[in-house]
Length: 208
Image (cartoon, rainbow, N blue to C red; front, side):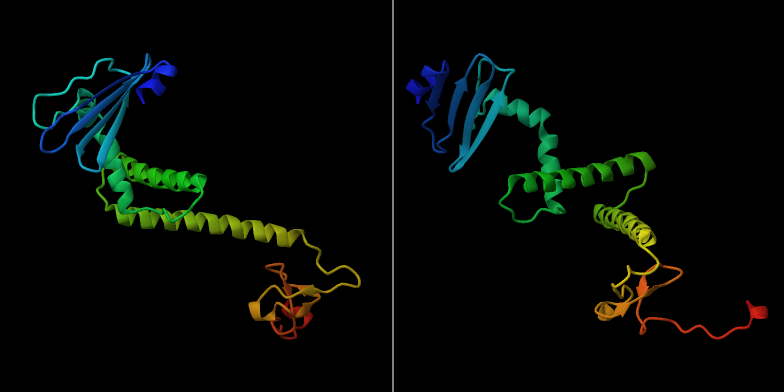
C-alpha cells in the first residue's frame, strides 16, 4: 500500500498498538487532507477525513484515541443525533437506486427540520409522530385539492357533447365506465349515462 500511495504523491504512516484490545490507528495524509483510520473494537473501524490536522496525535489512555476523532466527537455530534432521530420515523424503503435513496433521505431531513422549526417558531412542544401525521395529511389534502381543480378545469374544456359519430364513456361511477354517454352534467361537467342521470321533475314556466 505504501508503494501504491507513494506513486500518487501520498504519505502513509501506520502503527499497531499491541495491547489486549488490538486498537489500531492508521494515518494517510496528503498536502490537502488527512485520513485517520481508527479501530477501537474488532471489526469496527472509524474513518475520519480532516483538512485541519497535518499531525495526528493520540492520547495516553488505553483507547489511544487520535485527536481527529476527539475533535469530531466534540463538535460533530449533531450529525449522529440527527441520523438517530431520522431513523426513528423514516419513509425509506428498500431500493437499489441511489438517487431514490438520496431522495428518501432528503424527505426525512426536511420533515425533521420542519418539526424543529415549528417548535422554535411557535413555542409549542408537540410529539414528532403527531406532527408528521398532521404534516402528511396537510400535504395530501393540498395535493388532492390541486388535482381536483385541474380535473375540473380539464372537464370544463371538453365539448358539451361528443364529436359527431362518437360517444363518450360515463365518468360518474366506476361500474358505469363502460356505459356510453352523450350528455354532460350541468354542475360537474362529467359525461353521464342513463343510470347515473338524476331525473328532474316536470315544471311549468311559472315555477322556474
